[in-house]
Image (tube, rainbow, N blue to C red):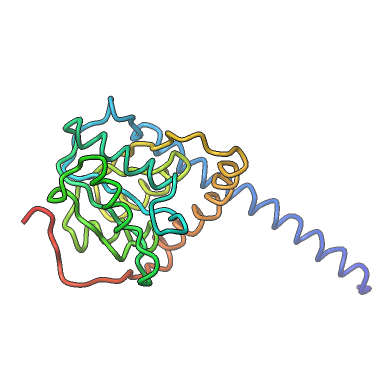
Length: 217
């Protein structure tokens, strides 16, 4: 076999592998979307659950909640005031003293009139995987409503269910996001979907844990 022929065969293998990976990724993402569809409910149609899990998102430069995070908190507050949930579990990244997603969520929720005694903060929700894992392992929640944007909900629901949590989702797409941003988020979520499957089925990483802090003693 000549070197040129070897390169041709190798190139063909890589092409077929790339095509296979593309279709596998699409299959996994579509499967996650289909599974999440019947468990996604707007506020008015949402079932009741003890807790709403509000997932963290980006902050503004001054440390306040960004527009995506504000939409999540606003939607969770709507669930609370509609009597759909009793508590709000706000889980986000606080890996440094300069970045505090749960604190920003708390501040914004208070400004919306949610009583502080009904807000629980999880400062170690660095990833969606961590937030869902800790909701069950640390806070003792086995029934909740996940609040996040539509592009993120299927993965969040998959992860909650993977940890034996009965979960439905409420989308928080209230703002007029830029089309370029929303397109980027949907594309990025495809890769995050693969990571979620890998973590649940293969890697089984442990998030930061600690003593139990049950929301309902």
